[in-house]
Amino acid sequence: MPYKDLVKCWHQGVLAAEKKDLDAALKNFTSFEDPPSKIWFNIASIHLLREDFLSALQSYSQSVTKDPCLAVGFFQRSYVHFKLERYEKALADCHIAMAQLRNNSVIDYKQLGLHHLLHAWEVLYNTAVILCYLGKWESAEQKINEAVTKLPGEIRNTKLEAAQAQIQSHCLLQPIHVPDGEIFRPRKQEVEQLNSKDFLGKPKIISSVVPNDQYSGFEPLRPQRPGFYQPCQEAIQGRDAGYHRVMVHYYPENSGEVAVKANSILFVLNKHGDWATAIHDGQKILIPSNFLEPVDAPKADMKKINNGIPLPPMKMPPTRPNAKAAGEL
Image (cartoon, rainbow, N blue to C red; front, side, top):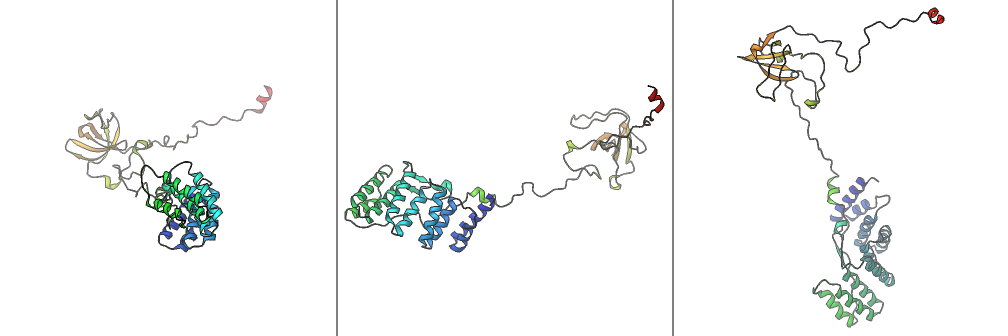
């Protein structure tokens, strides 16, 4: 399954779980051909909400098989073993969870999508609880005292203090676990990317200064085609409109404007007093009227209009050589 489809089903399953629609959540999570460890953890969490401990046990086993370093997976499987009264296996999973903490006092699974902190004292607390059910009260008392040492600084934990007193009185305790409904979620950035984004936006039509201009693209990349500007009727704005020849070189005062060489042919759109608005080399310019003289519409040189394909040679091809002359040589 493509990763995008995986994230989509994953997100839909999370939304269904938030709405307490466990059937829809389970349907989405089990729709993967080969679910990763996080999805198996979510499937187990849904079964746990239904109190289907055997299905939850199988799913947690799949989760830790996919990711043998998932301490919270062993922690949860230990809790399910406890609910099934398999205390020896529950104790073994607590030891594995503690080993996967790698001497850390806490593991924050938020970066992986699970909003839960697994503390070392929690694992030791559950270990002590299971030892109580196995009748090993002295070992249970040692573990609960070790749990107290795992607390950061001088922070007091009333739950641990109460547990110490209950174990000394040989009172059975109940284990703790990840809060109900807390599951792995896909990253927010991945969910946002599920919706298609229009990076280009809506197309905009930008009219050219040249009427009947069919070119679309960046102006600096406009190809230089042979021929002349061919106006439409809307371009002719006055009686003075038409083709003109530039009699002398015209250099505008502003260096950013277009300079026009003498004998250039341009098309005048209209004249306003001493100035004329004209089209030259695909651009709209202003040029003094006394620099211009009317001319007939020029004709494009068809020999130059080849669209990049060379024209055939004008000369006649060579004649076939004389067979006799070739034999004599």
